[in-house]
Length: 536
Image 1 (cartoon, rainbow, N blue to C red):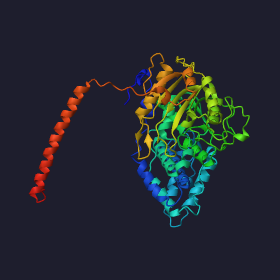
Image 2: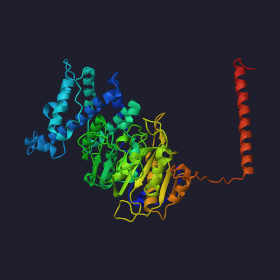
Image 3: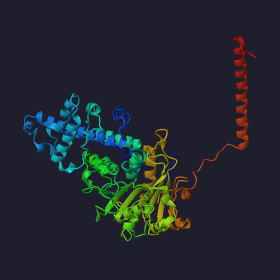
Image 4: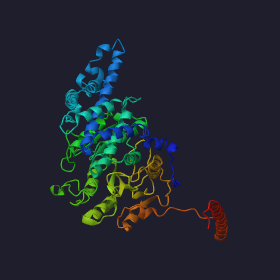
């Protein structure tokens, strides 16, 4: 592990950084076997289609389990047994009301029927749940009875999921979250590039959240995918003894199926979010036009060349220059800034080309952003973090006011005129042959460097080859290029205290001993071969 020379360790800052970055539990206990079993049942169905079959059933199983638990509480208490079929008994505890024929036990009992009607029963169940719970209207999958879906196999999936019990100290939300996130990740891998539109690598999301620290205020993601940024933000708040209503969640998604995934993903965790009344393109139909967010976290589509700038020629968001029609990177950057509150901070993922491109006016926009002192920090990420793309990516952090930051109850360092560069390309551990993951220690290392620079600037020290605080004047001398490797230098290496002559004497002596031992072994091998008639 690279030595940290910056000040401000976790305990001194009063915030256990590793706990923020750490996953709730290992994903090796039951998620992988469950996925493997379920995946065999999808047969030739495309992953994009089967995703909704599997995730819809997981959602249905969870809300039915929660309903059954709450019902059991009423029936176990003579004073409350009369409420077992009363809607308010459930909704008062944020439990969805599940009609009788939509409950899992009923569906399971019919899943092995010789009459293959399980798909129609599930469709009716989903429709009934939407009718009884307005917040889910138009969200749930309701095409389980379609001819191309093997009803016998569907019944097998129902029976398989019946063995999954959503029970833990948080009403099953931890177990559910693990299963849901694992399945989303596996579907993203299975779908390849298309999967990237709804799923961002979990370790990247955790790093963004650990750096921004969304304790209290409005959190916004205008390209929210399946809602992973919001889930991690909520978990961060809870990990620091905050309350869920300490943050308000706003999002938008242009893909209708992904929008539904996000609605389900947040609903099963009890997260209230304003994702708009429908799916819509953020650039052309901003559903939160007046929003000024305290925190923005996002992973917009990389290098999107079909975003429709011709319809937005004179848009008021292009304060720093018109983004090129061939690439939406700097359209996203300016959209984020447009929605930032005066003391807000944004953290987002972009392709590495955004750091140095001079084409189609991108260099001019980047220069304007630097001269207006909006760039807070740039992090170069290692490759192979995304299962859906091999494009090298980086993290941008943009702050509207670098003089005092977001936190009002403590004094932060005045970092105006400076930008922190972090080169994290050497971090990460291979999770599979082709996929890398940032560990909890990696996330803590990067986040601690950033917070030490922001909050303990008088004690912060650059780390050669890893982090460096750079003035805007120095960035201007580098043609306003923001590639961290250009600034952080190379990692300091410990000097070898052993004199060269002594080292050569030691090494040659060791080599002589090893060669003599090798000769003895060769002779012994020849002797043994001679004994069995194969000598020479």
